[in-house]
Length: 264
Image (tube, rainbow, N blue to C red; front, top):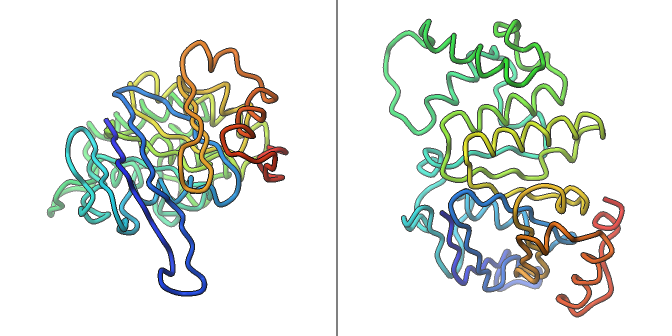
């Protein structure tokens, strides 16, 4: 479903501030894979997601989704088959618009727009049904502005919006990092439910090693713009945080790990 081949990205190339964010990155995801991504600061995790989403052009290499080469495709054209949830709960929604209006925008992602009623009765029932699955009471607040929701409620709504069209690839970019532990656990629980029920191919970045181990069927660790660990199946199920740190030290050739990675 996703294939990244020899992708390189250098920021500020040719200057004293040149920074190689992706260095010959290779990664392949099969249909239905739920892959957690972990690594220290500057490992290239978010840069990889931005490259997939089309936020910027890569310098070399190719990116394909479901067999289609999207390397040269602009960001807005990738919206038809990508869903994304950001770290900041304020992103991914229109705060001055109502909950049902935000869902209507999500339902029309990647489609041509015309002059017609924004939300039909049938669609409104769909939104109410989908919101009910979140178990947050939002189905009775569909006319509330999104800006009035708590961070956890908004992140759950953004997750629902990202998955509404059943994208070929769902990108979760540290989507629980800004939430308190209890709310983060709830959003992760919803993430598992939505991904599994819709059989979504998913990449989830996290700094929390326990979350990386507990969620998904596969774990990759990045360092210096490359994948240095790729663990799946029974090996992943048996992993502990100490195991993961030891493997990272061997794979990256260093005993150092960022505070954020360790404390997470």
